[in-house]
Each structure stands twice: as C-alpha cells, then as structure tokens.
Amino acid sequence: MKILRYLRDAAVFAPCYIALDWASYIDPVGPFNITPWNPQPALAIVWMMLGGLGHAPAVLATILLADIFVRHLPGGYAITGMTALVLAGGYAGIAWALKSFLRDTGLRSTRQLTIFASIVVAGSCVVGAGFIGVLNAAGLLAGTTFSNAWLRFWIGDAVGILVTAPLLFAASDAARRSALLALARRPEALLQAIVLAAAVRLIFEGFGSDPSRQFYLLFLPLIWIAVRFGMNGAIVATAIVQMGVVLGVHSDAGSALPVVELQALLVALTLTGLFLGVMVDQRQRAEEGLRQTLRLAAAGEMAGAIAHEVNQPLTAVTNYGRSAQMLFERDRTGPPQAREIIGKILAEAERAAEVLRRLRDFFRAGTTRLEEVRAEDLLSAARRMAESAVEGKGISLAVESPPEVPALFVDRLQVEVILRNLIANAVESVVGANRRGGNIRISMQRQDDRNVQIVVTDNGPGVSAANREGLFEPFVSGKSTGMGLGLAVSRAIAEAHGGSLEAATVSHGEFRLILPCVRNA
Image (tube, rainbow, N blue to C red; front, side, top):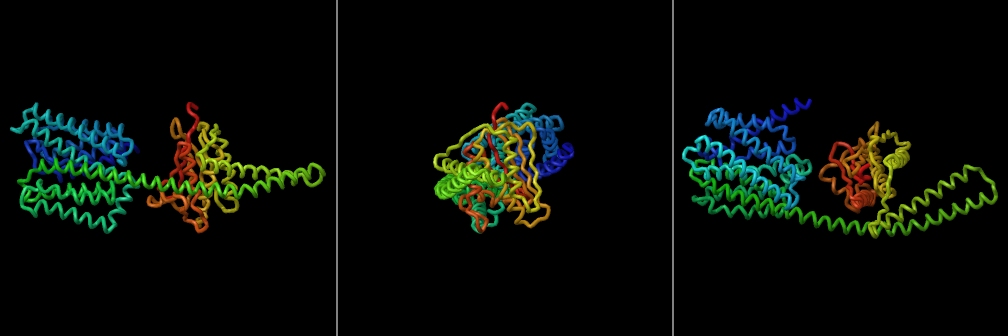
C-alpha cells in the first residue's frame, strides 16, 4: 500500500512540477537556459518537507524529465544527470532544514517567517552555486560569467520559493485553506485583487518605459491587502503580482525588460508583504487573547458568584443529611437502604461542594492541586459519568485505553469537570442529530513522553473550521438554554495544566484533550 501511495503521489507531483517549469521558462540565459523565476522548487521542497525525504528519488527523476521535455538536454545525459542530482540533493537539504527548524508551516510569527526566509535564501544560494559550478567546470556557460549565471539562478529559485511555498503551505492546511476560500468570496478582497492586477498592468503597459522604475506602485495595494487580511491576503497578493510579472515578461513588449531587476524587486515586495501580513495576524491574535482573558475573568467572577450561591443550599443538604443519619443511629429504626441512600446523598453533596470550591479557587488564583492519577481511575470516572448521561437515550458507549498509558499529573476534580462537559456535549450532539445507532467513544493514549491524549468522539455532526474556535469563547453558546461557559472553562483548565483542548475538524464530533503525565513512567 505504501508503494502504491508513493507512486500515486509521484504521478501527481511530476506533471505539476514539469508544468510549472514550462510556465516559468522565460528569458533563458546560456545553453542550460537559466531562468529568473523558478516556482517548481517550492513544490519539490514542500512535498519532501510534508511527505518525507523518501520522496527525493521521485524529485530527482522528475527534474530529469523536466530537462528532457522543457530544455531538451542541452548538456547531454551525463551533465544533466549531475545537475539534477545537485538540484534534488539541494532541495532535499532545504526541506530537511525547514522541517527541523520550522515546526509550524503556518508561518504565524515573525520568528517563523524569518527562519523560513533565511533558510530559503541561504539554501537557494548554495544550490545555485553547486548547479552553476557543475556547468562552469564542464565549460557550458557559453560566455556568461559565473557570477552573472549564479545570481540569476539564485534570484530565480529564491523568489520562486518565497512566493510559492507559503501558498502551498496554506493549501495543505485545512483551516488556512478554508480561510483562503472564505477570503475569495469577500467583495473587498475581489476589489483588492482587481486593483492589484490593474497596478501590475499599469506599470508594464501604461507608462511605456522600464517597469522597474514604477514598481513602487505595487506596495500601496499590497499594504492595503496585508493590513486588511493579514498573512492570507499577503500570500494571495504576492502570487498575483508574480503571475502579473510573468505574463508581462511573456508578452511581446516584455522581450527587452530587465527581468532580473524586476525579480529582485519582487523579492523585496514579497518579504515586505509577508512580514506585514504576519505582524497583522500576530496583533489580531494578541487582541483576541486579551478579549478571551477578559471574558474568562468575567466567567470567573460569575463562577465565584454561582459557587457562593450554590454552596449555601449544598451546606443545608449536608446538614439535613447528617441530622437524618443521627436520627437513624439514635432510634435504630428504619430500613438499612435509607441509611445507605442518605450516605450517598451526603457524599455527592460534599463532592459537589468541593468541585465548586476548586473552580472558585481556580478562577480567583489559578489554583490547581496536582496529584498522580492513574489512567484507569480517570477512565473509570469517565465511564460512570458517561453511563449516567446516556442512560435511556439508546446511545452505545465504548471506553478504550491501551495498557501502557502512564499515570497523569493533574488536578483530578478539575479534569473530571472537563470530561463531564465533553461527555454532555457529545450526548447532546448525538441526540440533537436524531440519528439511530448513536455512539460515543472515550479513548486515552500516550501522545509523547510528557503528555497523554484523551479523545471523546461521537457520531453526531462535526465542527466546521469556521466555528471551531468560537466554541471556546465564553458566553457564546449554540444552545437556547446554554450559558456558553462549559467549553471555555474546560479549555482554561486544560491550559492551566500545560495541556490543550481542541475540536477536530472532521465529519463527526471529536474533542482532543492533552494533559501532562508522570515522566519516565
């Protein structure tokens, strides 16, 4: 199966790579036709970065095919094989460096973007030197100096990767892909794309002179787009500009244009747009984090007030229960079942009061009482809560855990609050969908050396990417009688433990809770 999947992916990759190589075949220099814009390396790098370096042989074979179909083997099979080996090895090295130092392909911070740009610029520089070095050693530069050929190749690869790779990263991420599709449907975004395309056409055809002198006009719409739509807008804007430059150079009027100068300006434009976009996104996340903190603070105040009000009747229930126990003990009358029931009432009342005190302390001071909790004990508690929740509703329940799951290091009562909320949401999702054969599954597995993952799954409707984060906002609820605090409080508790709580974007309901475990267990 792995071999078939490998061949399937290679069969999709190779035509796309060759098509990009053909589309970017403009203003070639020398017998090896060195072009100033090469987007196809981005496709190879992203494929090896996301799919693994095991794809390097397919990349090597595809580069050879591209040289045969696009450039017609200008140096013969031997030289073409050597240069293809240099390119495939170089692109694999860039993919390895990006995967090692860039943990998140979303490019969501200036640090991540700086790492990405630095690796791309430095890596394409080294690859270009190796490629041109092979040609120079074979005497195939045909009068072109090493420095000129190397500069053209370096700029071509660098700008192609800088513009194309972020777009491919976005296309491979479901949440960002959905955001890009939503962006394409906005009238303002359409207007911005039209203005940007018009600006590109203006600098190529409207002034009738060197377009590099009017290239600064593109910064105005780019800044507008990046400020309004952040990184997603910057990615699309730089791609539009790049395509405009390509079409302009491909036209008859573009035969005498300074292509290298234009591409150098495009590098500056691309980096400006990407950095501005990521800074806008960072600011928006910081503002949203502040709003979330304020909402949680309000939720904490409400939780404290609720705890104070509910604690009084709980205390009364406890006192009445103890009085009844004393009467039973004094008179020695009454059925033994009644004494047992009163004992259970007292235990549950004391437990509810303790949960309220813990939540109040958590919201007031972030207090957690961490202890070792066996995975089996936590799952047993989850099973009891789930069995009580699904009773009489025709929902099947499965609780699974592999034997090697270590003990967790958590506040048990607070984690049980999270599980109770997740189970209640799963039951409501299944019941609300009116589906026959409803089922809920609770599973636990070791995620890594430090964390355990608990997954609560149901066969109700899933959560869309657009609504995923809104689920965890305080006072936002999709239920007519809901307060919108359950998931907000649950995520706050998980993050206070150093873990996380996320809703998976799948066709069914699924929540993933990450919690710390006892190390070296």
